[in-house]
Image 1: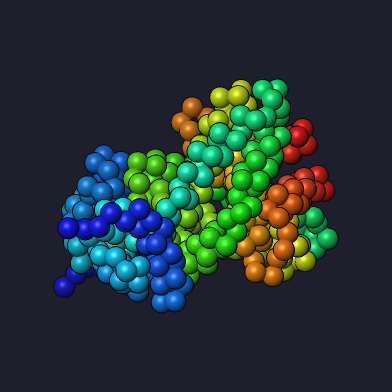
Image 2 (image 1 turned 45 degrees about the vertical axis):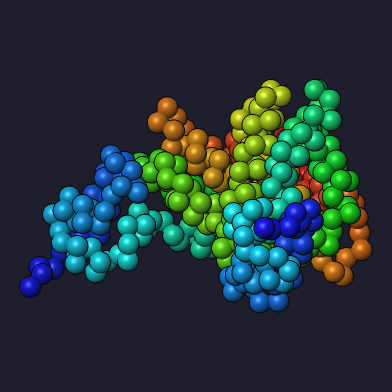
Amino acid sequence: MPRWEPDAPARLQEAALALFAERGFDDTTVAQIAERAGLTKRTFFRYFADKREVLFWGADQIETLFVAAMDEAPASAPALAVIAVALDGLAARSEDQRELIGRRYRIMAASPELSERQHVKIAAMSAAVAGALRERGVGDTAAALAARAGVSVLFLSVERWIDPANASPLRKLVAESLASLREVVAEA
Amino acid sequence: MPRWEPDAPARLQEAALALFAERGFDDTTVAQIAERAGLTKRTFFRYFADKREVLFWGADQIETLFVAAMDEAPASAPALAVIAVALDGLAARSEDQRELIGRRYRIMAASPELSERQHVKIAAMSAAVAGALRERGVGDTAAALAARAGVSVLFLSVERWIDPANASPLRKLVAESLASLREVVAEA
């Protein structure tokens, strides 16, 4: 009879992140993750379908959070102002996850398969954000451009934030990237 | 002995595009493409590694063309002005390919596998354009944001252009999308 392991998902994720960083995502097996966590493969599969799922545990709701954070902006706000409000809200609630997100990003960057998945996720998030802007009455092209620019600002800021040499809060980096976007567009 | 077939690649692509549109990319085989073109599978594999390659024949140099088109901008031009020059050049040389590109896009949109490939290609193109901007002395964040905005403008414009209900030249649609980007950023 398996024991009830209330912290099993967290232990499995910690073991998985450590192994992916040590030997790479592709060369790590579920059996190795379970062993490192002191659990069985059977326990692993009670919580996760595969090793990709354990890596992204707790991360896949970011698209939903982004769209929900747009609600904080007044109905009359122009498209990019809505994006700015959402990004600031998202950044504020992510500040304490820098280490976890940084580990996950470094693992993704080292795996072509995971990098591809990330591009597909970014495209899906851009489409969801554009849809939410259209619901606010923003035109198709403006909604698509504002959404893609906003998602670019988010991911560029996160990349700077997780750099071990960086000590800035994510909110500050997001504000800087948005300012850079305004500059780039204004000067041309 | 196989006959020399000088127009074999074009015939194979035409047959492939017709079959992909009729029955979907996933449900079309190389044997069917060869048969529709009146050629053998062996002839197919003399020109293409697989059915994906025949679809993208002639399309995969767009990243190189984008970066090359940036050379037309003066060295002192700001980042987004360089992008604008490149987009206008790219659009001008694509005007006569609307039908082929439209067929290809509709096939891609109907296949999850090809849509994923497209997202990965777009990300690679953004990285190449950002690299070319950095070589011109543009800072990292500004280069990344201008590149992603420019690539977004290109693909949004192409999506509008290939809409059968649309009669505008691609250059006009690119100019409109760039104007929309300026508006979106200026009003926030």
